[in-house]
Length: 354
Ligand code: NAI
Ligand code: MG
Image (cartoon, rainbow, N blue to C red; front, side, top):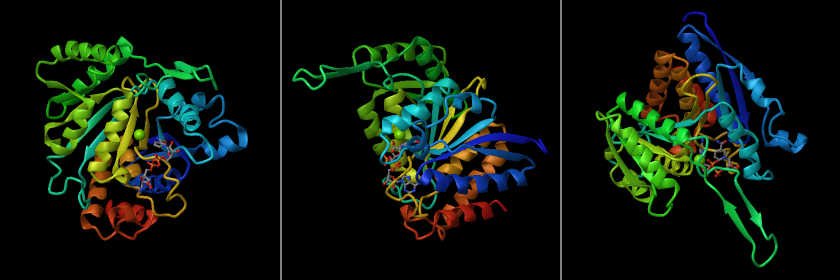
C-alpha cells in the first residue's frame, strides 16, 4: 500500500460543485498522506461555462480521456442559462453509460449534530442504502414531440427495462444485503405502470428465490416514500429503478441531514471502467459563490471512492473525522444552523483526521 498513487480525474463542474470539491480534495489528500498513499488529481473544466463558450459540456473524446483513471470525482453540473437536460445528457448520463456505472449507490445515515425531520431517531434506526438503477429505465431518449404547435400536439417518453439491466441491479442489491442486515425492499408501481413494473417485479421474485437467506419484500414507491419517513427502521437495502431511486434518495437525504450531507457513487461493479463519485445535490445556484455550501456530502463521496479503491481504513478515518466535527457542533455551515464557511468546515474535518 505504501507509496501507491491513485490517478483521479476531478470535474468540479458548476456552482457549489466547485466550492465543495476543493474542500473534499483537501480532506482526501490529508487522509491519504496519513495512510501512506497518494491521490494524483487531474482537473477537467467540463461545465456549463464550457458549454457556453464551446457549445459542448465536454470534448468529443471526453469518455476516452477519462477511461485511464482509477476514479472520477465529480462536483455537480447545471447552471441557469443552460437547460438542465443539456447538462445532464451532455456529461453525466453519457459518462454513467459509457462506463457501465449501472449501480447508483446512495447510503443514508443520520449523522450526529443534525436535526432530522425525524428528530428523536438515532443512527441505528435510520441507516439504509438506496441502490438505484443508473443506466436505463425511465431516463431514456426514446420518444418525441409530435404535431408541434398544433391543437393535437403530444409527447411520448418511453421507458426501457432490459432483462440484463434489471437482473444485474437487483442481484447487486441482494449481494449488498448479505454484507448488511440481510433485508431488501424493491420499489415498484405495478398498479400504475402496467408493463415495466410487473416485469421488474417478476425478475425481483426470480432473483430473491436465489437468496433464501435474505428477507425480501416489495412496496409501491408512494407507500415506500411514506414508510421512509414513518418507519425507517423497517428499511435497509432499497432497490429501485432510475427515476424512483432518484426521487427516493432526495427524500432520504431530506429526512436525514439534508442534501448537504448525502453522498453517492456511480459504480461499475466488475471494475472494467472507472467508477464516479459525487454528492447527491446539484450546483445550488441560489447559494453558489457565497462560500457557504456544506462540503460534507462531497467529502463523504470521497470516502466512498477510497472504499471502492480498497483503502477501507482511510475511508473510515474520513467518515470518523466528519462525524467528530458534526458531533462537536462548533463548526457548521448555515444549512446545519451555523455560521461557518465551506472552507472552515473543510479545514475542521481535515484537522480532525489527526
Ligand atoms: P440542488 O441540489 O442544487 O439544490 C437544492 C436546494 O438544496 C437548494 O436550496 C440548495 O441551496 C440546497 N443545497 C444543495 N446542496 C447544498 C449544500 N451542499 N449545502 C447547503 N445547501 C445545499 O438542486 P436544484 O436546485 O434542483 O438544481 C440546481 C442545478 O443543479 C440544476 O441545474 C440541476 O440540473 C443541477 N443538478 C445537478 C446534479 C448533478 O450534477 N449530479 C444533481 C442535481 C441537480
Ligand atoms: Mg437527484
